[in-house]
Length: 348
Image 1 (cartoon, rainbow, N blue to C red):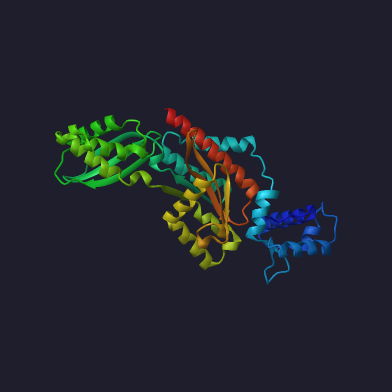
Image 2: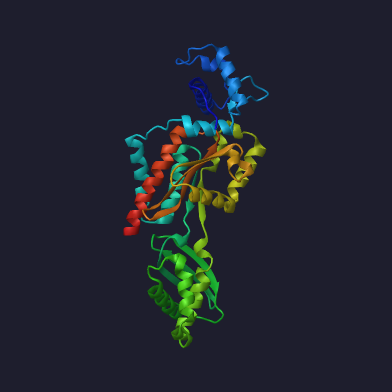
C-alpha cells in the first residue's frame, strides 16, 4: 500500500480537484498559487514528480502539466476525498421527483434514471431487479389468437414481466381465466425463486394426473415462468450528456462509448457485479470494469431494495474526472429514498 506524506496528499488532492474542474493537465505553478500552499513551484514540481513515479500522476507528452491516473484517482477516492452533504432543498427535490411516480414501479425506476442524468449531468442508470428476489403475486393469461398467448407475471413488489407462449391446442379466454385462477391460488406469496420447484412438484402429484385443467395450467405456467425470473433489465438515460465533456470530443472514442451503452447484456453483468460485492456506494474506474471501451469512464453506484435485501442498483456513468464529491451523495440519497418508496409500495 502506498504511504503518502501530508504534503504529497495535499498536492495530489489539488491536482485532482483542479483537473476535475478544468479537464486540463495541471502544472506546478497553478498549484503553488493556492492560498494554502506555502512552498515554491520547484518544490511542488518535485512532489509531482514523486507522485508520478508512484504511478499516481501522468504527464501527457504534449503538456508540461500532469493528470491523475486511475491508480491516483482510486487512492484519492478511498483515502483523501471528502464528500459534501446534500442540502435540505436538494433532498426535497429528489423526494418530490420520485414520489410523483411511486404508483408504478416501472415508471418509478425509469424516472430515477432520468433524475440522475439530469441532476448529475451525466448518464443515469438503473438496474431493474430480477423477479427471483421477490414473491409471486399474480399471473394473467391473455388470448391473442387461437394458439397465441400473452402472459403477464407480477411480483409482490410490483415488478412486471411479459412473455408470449404458443399453445399446442386451440384455447379460449374462458379456459385461460380458469388457468389463471388456479395458478394464482396455488402460488400466492411463494418466493419466485421457488415457483418452478413448486410447479414441478404439483405436476408430479396424483391429482393433476387425472385433471386435465390442472395439468394444462401448470404446464403453461411453467413455460411462461421458465427463464423469466432470472432476467434483468437496465434503464439508461442521458447518454448525450457525455457529449458535453471535452475529453469525449474525439468522434471515434465517442462512437465506442455509445456502442458500449447499446450492449445492455454486458451493462447488466457489470451492474450485477456491483450489486454482489457492495452494500453501499461503489465506484468503478476505467479499466477496473469489464468494458474495455470504458477506459476513460467511471461508474458511481449504490444498491436499492428493501429491509430484506437489495433489489437492484442505481448509478451514474461519466468521465473519469466526474465531480465525485458532488455526485456520490446524490446517488447515495437517491438509492436510500428509492428504497423507502419501494417499502411503502410493497406494504400497499
